[in-house]
Image (cartoon, rainbow, N blue to C red; front, side, top):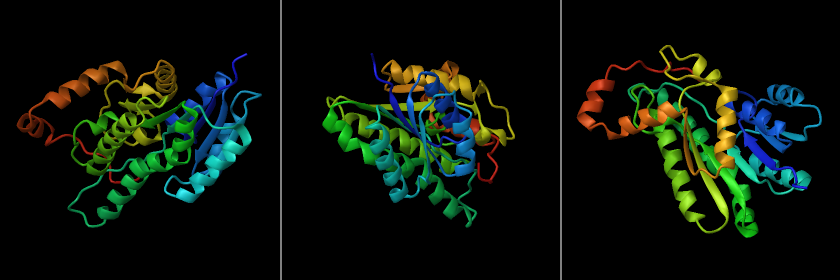
Length: 258
């Protein structure tokens, strides 16, 4: 009998993270769920199917020690995870010309980039030694080109994509897989405040289902939904002068935390 997979997910209290928890719970996985808001995370855990084994940890991905303690606790309780998903992330409109946004840039990078590093670090060496495991980072289509008013978010997701690529090459031949997931617009609290049209907007549950299938299928780079993959290709191919002209007046993300 195949043992239940062990899956460790950050940012599990809402949005894609909570939907991933539900998807894996439906498969009988043993879960390690991490989120900053303990009360909201407990609500997610309580709503999982009866019989689900889920270990909840209140931790901020900006806190290296807290993530290390959560990882150590999960390993002691359930064993080394088979899949680790660094999903925690934030979004906020930012403007370099606004002095107060300097701190916002730093916080977005700390969560969206360093949060992935801190999530993987407690497991990476042990996975290499074991010769198996999957490290999954949630990036974004927003990392393909710089979007006006979203300098921090776009740049952090571009950095995440490059970091995950570096990691994938580093682990090549080790038995450890590194997966980059680039969602387009997904209906989550992060997108709920966007005051502009969001093409191909997907429900979080459907997005999570496709992500789980992409991970199981051995994908190394996955864009969803599929039309956004084509949009991404077009965006990356646009010459800079044309891109600049087309996007100079694009709608901006609100300068509030999401």
